[in-house]
Length: 262
Image (cartoon, rainbow, N blue to C red; front, side, top):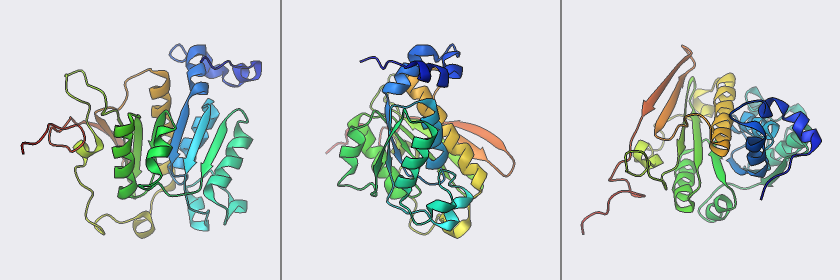
């Protein structure tokens, strides 16, 4: 089904439509797309805003947290009047104000083993901006089983990373595309990686990574440029350096690896 753009939408998205690699057809793809965003915090805030501004048809947002004063240093989707409100409610109001053509569906819950499959299968693509390893592994595993592309980002105090996963497809080398477990076979032991509450986080860094996540989601939907499948983008905010590392399918990974001998 082709998503028809209204005259108001054509004017609103005119700078996209002028781009050769997006154009009217690309903008129609964006309008028809449904994206599930995990987390409405530091990464989710700019991610949701840029997806809404770009004209996504529907953005589902999963977050069970409420806005607190310490969030506002980086979570720019929310403001001081939103203190105490559920983040998904604040996000819904912000998107409505930014672009009334976009539907934001709130899910005031934490992604877990009970609800994750249904949530992920209901959307075309998933963007994970969560702040814990359990959610990242759960999202990546179920996106593999549901055959949904996953854009996943993470930040530390002064560093960040971003990659895209399509492990249900075959790469140019004839092998399956890598999974998240090919890149990070196991989560680190509890307590070895400090949380942002413990170590702090540079607010503008979450804005950079969240905006790049939105760019990667848009590229995946429209289909232009070279995506980050099999490539891990690393950002060093202390020295403002960017590096891209290539990674490959690990035949021993438990999702799409080679069967083990009995």
